[in-house]
Length: 253
Image (cartoon, rainbow, N blue to C red):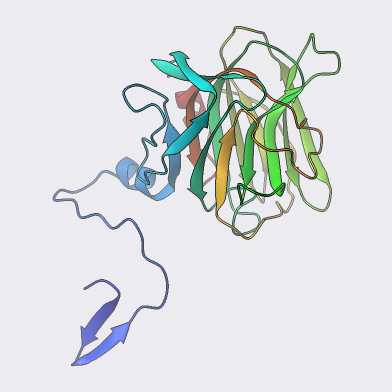
């Protein structure tokens, strides 16, 4: 039975949601169990199904005016600017997700072809609204130099500006969040900085992950509502705060 139990001839019913039930005819390792429980999405952008989720939840994505190119690991997705993006739906525990201040992590390789101010990673709860959150982008005052920038919202913008980027060069970025530590930025597997504790405001909805800038958010903070130009590869979304060692492992792939 799923959803009820029979005890002493009395049937008791579960009140709530159940999803993605799988029965495995072997004992799983602790790493396998942790992955199944906390890997919300993994997009490798590898052929033959580059837009599919390679994680346990099958939150497959859709692209618009993006192409598959040679990547950091096998293939990657490349964005050309305006109206070039990728999106996938089904993310419960992210900064702009269902509940406030729940731990999450976003990790990815980026290879920009331009260093103009832009958004790389967004979350939104609708494809027809400007209610979205720009999480990761490029900060640039002049368009000739660019830095990683990440941000969260808690009655005001919580902002962290990271290291400088180089065009046509792969850089690994991991952004983790917990209420205790706030946002933490790792670059190429190394710790860069963190914001300190804050309450990450939620939307109350299951969200879309958007790469390459899809929407102009009504409030964008310091991450510009502008299109990213370049490639993205090996995107991981976790519903927990990754450790330094785990980030280093991802950056070593």
